[in-house]
Image (cartoon, rainbow, N blue to C red; front, side, top):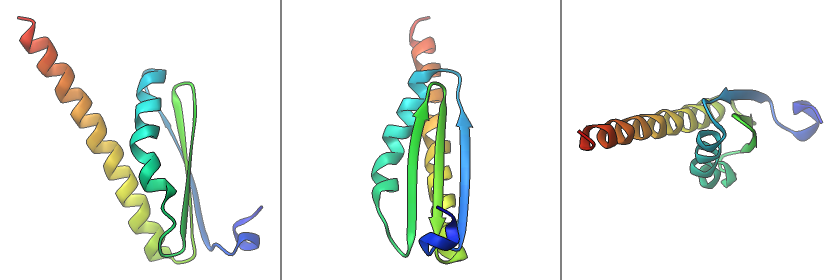
Length: 95
């Protein structure tokens, strides 16, 4: 189905590749609640396959698309930073 057939004007497919399967699954689990919301004519889907997480965003309006894309990518960035900080804290506490 194309974006035009489904009534959406803007569509992006973003594929994120991580170091391991567990991290990919953690990102999907963290984003699932946000992706399930269909607000302001925006639809988001998430899929994982091994170390990859695919994010598909479709929107009727470019501004809603941009807002959703920014929010989801910001969540990914925050999650990765938290994981990095926790790993650093764990290695620091083992000294």
